Image 1 (cartoon, helix red, strand yellow):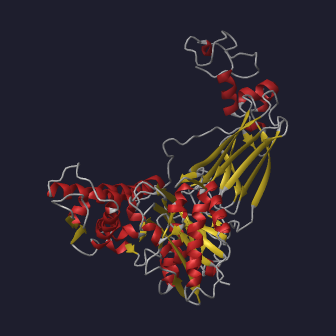
Image 2: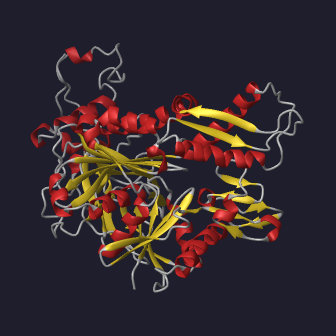
Image 3: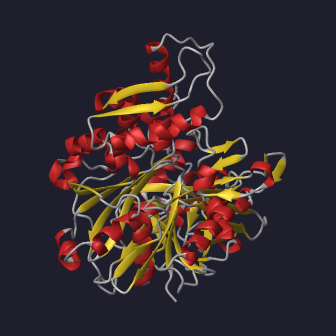
Length: 601
């Protein structure tokens, strides 16, 4: 049976499936199904009926109605209409409603719809993914694979274009940006096409500039202008349910002003006033820009920040694929054209269904996610060992991938083993030693502070689960210490049908010489972990306590260890610290007490 693509969006949800060579979207009156559930009077209503009860554009709980229960995943039970309700069950109601809707359509009657490829925002945390998977299971569907929403949109765009192989060859080695701006979130994915693989370079996402914020600001400004036009003070009340109707009219105005120069917002009755009951405000495109222009500027700034963070310019981007309802606004289109040029911006004509269609094609092609970048462990002396190599297939439902490593602590002096997991800026398995690394997580493990270097054995296990979450667990065998950390913001790659079979044999080095720098707030931790016994990895002052003979001149010890040992050792003549300005002993003949030569002044 066909696996269905499922876009459980913040504000709307849609299921799609590929039958033969055609993709079928299960729309409700040509529109996706609102991700809204209502519990008014103990009666559960979902979708369009629940959406009609909304009085505000904000997400979350509004009286007895919940807009986008997905945003509540991970929180405790919520009291709604006097009843404590589990957010997972709220999500289940929406998913089950979409499933039942699909199965009652003519095209969906032959489907079982028990297996789906589900899309998720790029910044969705691991525990929320697990709860979303649970909600799908409770609704009678198993999630075969999660896929980031922008990556799904890009896959669908390439698969549904005429001459897909030629298009993939055209973009081979090029940088592509997917700009997905919907009602609840703005998601960005920077990708590169490499040998038929769609490889994520970097991701970014925010819930601060979703289309719902536009609707809210537009509604407030329209009412403000209406009161000013009719000289109505704040003491004139609004009729019950009237603001809900105004909200819907403002949503309509935002859409209509995409292809018209003006639109009349009209709600009657609106005010509880004998002299003036209706609300009527004429809006132009310029008015719309004045009201919500700061939100557009804030959203587009995320693009510039992402490119700057990764060391690219707008000129490096060959294609900007814009999806989501917000990209139809003229001011958004204009800003994208200004950044990339009209020839490199593609506004998806199927923006409402692009993500679900992409997920459906991923399901149809049985396209597997691969890890786009190595996951590495930082070792002593600034070297790295791969824990998971780029190209490894990501687990499907009920699968795990585990790797275990035996390690040593080269300097247990402070009683902690310091594990630093990093990911190179460069995608693919071939990574240069001096490539910039991005910190993924740090683990601090309790070890025996009195142990000699390499004496206490350490173990590290890294695993990736069905939710694409990496878990790192470290143990110290003597102290029985344990440390755990999770990483959910990994980058992935999807293989198109024409991709070469072996990632590991491909030359996947990027073409740009730019290298991303550290972000403000990045924590760099000096690792004291080693994968082999090698005295040159031990700090000089530590090694001297256990092997003083190592520093004899005839042993030719490494210069850096000699300098470390001398820096931390008090002067053998005056007893002062090595950096004490009152110590002038470096001008006297070399000391013979330690068997090493003091540096000359």
